[in-house]
Image (cartoon, rainbow, N blue to C red):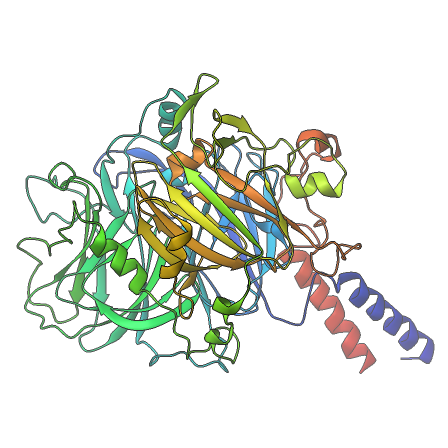
Length: 594
């Protein structure tokens, strides 16, 4: 090869490297294709329409390693708009990939869109699901696992296997019927059952469970220890999870290692994820029950709303039989549940995604720069519609996503006037969001004056759960805060008639959703957003990634959207095929130059 050809090849290589350097870093890439479509299934013995992912219900696991760049091409084969959100995954510097209507235009039917984000400095157990219009009530969810890099030790012996269990309350009505009920001002009522990995209950009781229902069986070997990842992907019901005669050694929740302690059962609220180490140390005279039963309800009335799977030892000698292991008996006493919640502490001696103890972040010594009190009340009628609120505001989803409106100077898409505390005024529907301060350290008080236990979720962040109590929060409540080893997570429960306090450092720029994870309350408007902008970042490339090349347009910017060609090819910024072509070209050029 001549000097001129070598020079041309080198210049081309440099040009390509510069062109793609904002999008592709030195960390590995992992590519996934998710196709959402309807299938007919009968998880509770009644044929119904469910949302499958790649023809599976639940969907396949996304399994990557810390710092991987994740590229997910989502194909919408539903008959309505779609977005996928990533529960607990912190989209560092890129709320563009968050998958909620405040940050993304929807993926239309028969369209596809490619998400690209990095699981920067993250480990743990998460899940993905459709975020629009109650769709999660029909399925579309699946597990998302982020494993440690080999150089980072885990704070327990390597398990012999990994087991994912997805639990959730379930209705035989499809999601469109559920949202129609809410639109008509009707409560959803008691669920028809609880599913475990998309399947109905094992027939532990001939009266409560009809014959012919397919149930989940978890196969294990005696003497081995498994990491059991449990996610509550349901609509609105807290579930108590337990495995008959086995201890649950809590090890991790939503990306953070916990102090390891044994539980006989754990309350898992809507949207929460846990990892337990479970040792198969029982005899194999029979199989064992795996149970997920409703909490904070009348157990007699809700008895049939119980999920039951089977733990099957490879040398088992018989089927599971007899009564289910008992749930906590505290219907009229919330102290057990509250004490259990606050017993979940962070393991401050373990490394997380980086080779340094998590406890090195002394959150208890940082001055709070702002306090927000978010009060939730029972749904009320506003302008003739049943709505749910935070601080008397029921959020109306913007026609133009908030950060997109900023990027293109669209006026009036939202208001930066969300009140920092409840106001004594009639409730209203509005597009009010929080104007938060970059690098602020804020305290959020979640005051639940509703009649049901709720889950609160924050996109883009984990927060320290420092306090929890019954009654109304007061300034004196800060005296009970845990300021040393509070667990950090992205979804936390708030008991009915109670409060939860969290602390969070606002170091991730973008627009981030704050919401009730209970689908009915979320659908009725109990959410808002935090807008966090770095005032010194004038280019948009230092602390926040730019608008992605494959961005979808809607609302005031709908005229910019070009019709999508229906194919499997994805965009340059996120497309696996284009990236692979780029790798081939670069490899060829490098081989020529060498």
